[in-house]
Amino acid sequence: MGLKDELRKLVELQYFDTEIYSLKEKKNIEKPQELEDLKNAFEKRKQQFSSFQEKVKQSQLKRKELELDLSSKEGNVRKAQGDLYQLKTNKEYQVKLREIESLKADVSLLEEDVINVLDKIEEEENRVNEEKEKLAGAENDFREKERKIKEELKSLEIEIKGLEDKRKIITDTIDRNIFPVYERLIAIRSGVAIAAADTEHCGACHIKITAQQINEIKMYKDLVMCENCVRILYIKEDIL
Ligand SMILES: [Zn+2]
Image (cartoon, rainbow, N blue to C red; front, side, top):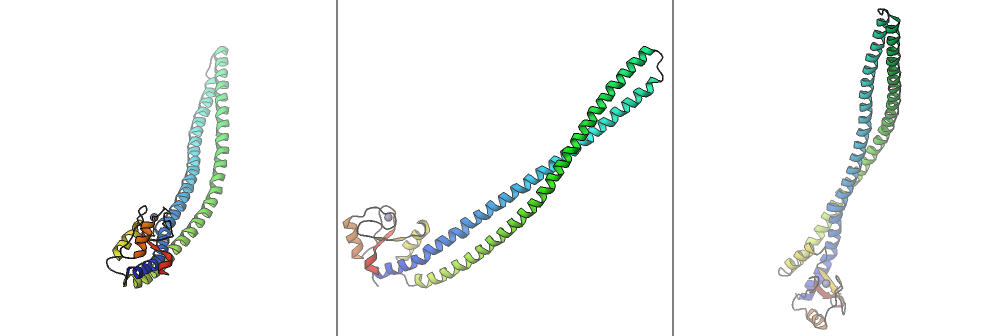
């Protein structure tokens, strides 16, 4: 068979290979990236939720600290009040009373702090509960999308397999000297190894082709490659 016939088969083969190439891009790059992005977004939400929980924990610690402090200051007040009965002079008594006033002022400041931290804890716990529901929703959403993508990946695999079986029928008939050239190009030229040249341009990269090159193509003696994108060239009308 002549070169023209071989080129005709390559064009037919490339019809499958371009499709296979684009399906493989989806299966190996786009879909896994989509899945990765969804995973990351969900992980981020989980981390955000943990940070809300962590805030409650910190506030609870603060509350314990304040309550301990409060109970110790209340003890001081009680002790000072007990001391009152043992004082001998009015002056000592007045000094102690002032001391007690000052201790009581500390106590009421601390009581305020405790109330504030309790309010804060309530707010933060409400937030955690709200976020918990949202997170559960986000998790369902994520699982559902993940399931869909995995299904898509499966059907892409089946589709690719089907096309590869069909291409095999053609490849078995192609000249053993020409086929490896095509195979190498299809792998490194984004699924396009052979390009139709019109009267002036490469159909793939659109660079101008000389009349001399057109003549060489039309002889169909040797493979003619585009000098710019290095793809096999043919003239569409010749192999219809
Ligand atoms: Zn080109």
